[in-house]
View 1: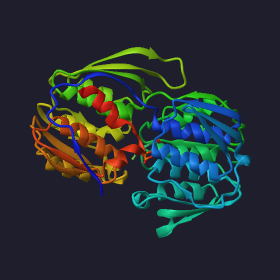
View 2: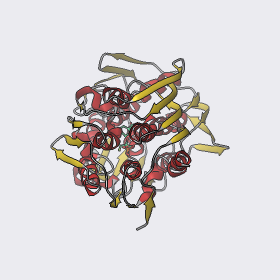
View 3: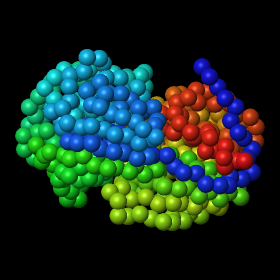
View 4: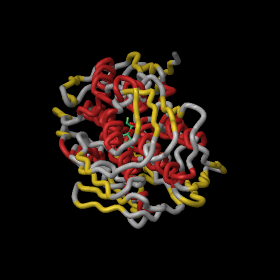
Length: 429
Ligand code: SPQ
């Protein structure tokens, strides 16, 4: 296993970071390009390992995808253009790839198998295999449809009315992608609003979708047309520098090209509630996905409560919010976040255990964590446990640490942010 020494004892961070493309939107741009008719171009696509897994799966499904100077060209021939793959579709570490792909394959009249790495093998799939079976597809997986590997023989789909048992954009998107192929209208009701990139992309590719409060309806049999997609920067990646700028004294960072879709901006609300000095500039609200630049300056922070409908809007930012709370005055409570247990790792346990190694005062609860600040962090050996967001959170924690911090398994960071360390180093020079 590899390990690296992280930069520690940093006095201030200064400069700018152009945030790389959004992972969720990059995945969806390839998928929609593949199921639409015509040539789709995608700029600012994220070349992270997860998104490369999506490209590789669609190539195995017979879709021509070309990459030239960071620009993707996808030659789609509609859902009907997808071909039976002769190999296993390997999704690597990517939950988004496997869950959304199942929705696409559910309506295809051929056989496919899907599998990924050890982390994917532990992530629950019944939440997707269950509703897709109700729509009439043949789908089976280890432990009664619960875990990879997964086998699908798709076919004629009937529409369903489905109340989502968990607030999950992946489950919603998978059913929407199946719904686009069903014989009639599919309706989904969300318990809390989740990221809506799939809904926006259906419209961007010329399709129709209706939303009434938390009820979303899509008609089957729509023909999608190719589009030109510009992927904004990933706010989940920006979050690491937003927190770093807020907590490292004397810092000022300009984050350029950050996606500001309101279903993803929970982190900005938390920063403001905790007293962060943050300003949004040059907002673009005309595109299918809004974006803008953000300036963050260090300031003193106070504890907060993060809960309820805000959780799905910042679910992937909770590890870095937990670190921020160690540097805030008073108590921070994170609750209603049981979903963290089924991410790349159990993110309640990994956050609590790894931050404790650095001297944080933090405890796990059944649905989140409680953090007491303000604590000085110490050195130690920590691990990403193969989880990109844990690895990046620990690299930011090390900046605040008085002693040496060693990070085991830093490679996982390339899943969503291949040039993370280069961007961090630019701010410390
Ligand atoms: O793709 P994957 O592995 O599930 O990635 C994660 C992440 O931290 O990058 C979760 F572990 O993000 C999910 C996110 O948590 C990406 C996503 C999407 O693109 O639709 C939705 C969220 O997951 P869910 O289960 O709440 O739908």
